[in-house]
Length: 406
Image 1 (cartoon, rainbow, N blue to C red):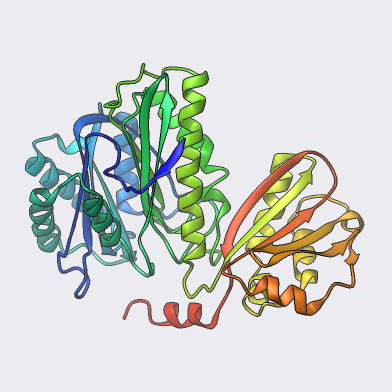
Image 2 (cartoon, rainbow, N blue to C red):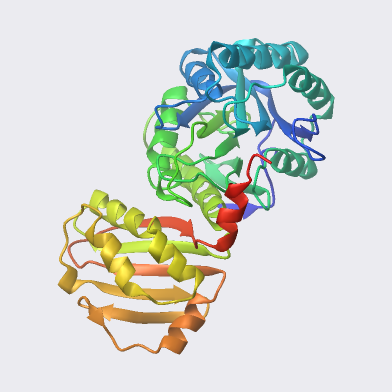
């Protein structure tokens, strides 16, 4: 498997486009992904009881539609808490795109991101769809334009692509996503779109996606808020020509490995681009008794506001880490925990068996002053581990969210 320079158009048969529909001021705000052949579709969605209209539409589409073939996305308005009118607008978006692409409306997935509570300006949405279809292309630039067009408070587009061998055939998996704030496990205010030319059954595609999200998008947090619109959509058109994957085995494992790279890289991109963030904060919990224990501890550390503030201040305040572990609900022995900080500037053991090692504060500050920082907690209980990703908590986070709607 190897990473390649690409986005959602990297797999065979996929096209993409982005355009300015006028929903947001002076920037691109609509995107489209299209496969020249029908796709198996899979999805995972927000656990928030308040679900946006597009989430309801897409959940139905990936489970009941014969196939899916396109995705239409708008930024600026979330189409959440909009009642039957908002759900009707999802249907209208799908129908408009279906007519333009000559495919059934049931084959069109829709996604929205932005302000909650406002109704979509359907005249602008329909004009945007009409502009998008002629722009659809399979180039690297087309993929980048689409990725840029779904951003809200993101500071940069988020894309990744890999190639792998499945049964002697080259298969490509690629993805793009958006997300910067209202990010919390299960899942986060993020839209993610993954494309692949692998030939795989719907059942195995959904299994691969549902399994992988547990250790990727469900392990990131920026601010503790779980959104109404979170969606990860995966489309597979089978154009690579590999023998169809219909069950577990070597081919399925190879596909899952490639999918995991895409999902993990995009997860880290979201965490590192948290609103106002200055660094990516990674938490590793090692030698836990169970996988679930490791996940709970890692999430508790990465979501601790006091710990995140300390990371922003380059302060090795390890007591906050141990404290966050203590209220996580996971049972462990505080007096046996070791804690390390690590970055490109080095690795430093700051806690041994629950007590300070007498480390150098200057060295700790140097390690914590990098663009990516890792905290490692060794609980010495078993062989399981987990990783969570977040970011520091800065002054700019408050500024961004204090006037988000304006």
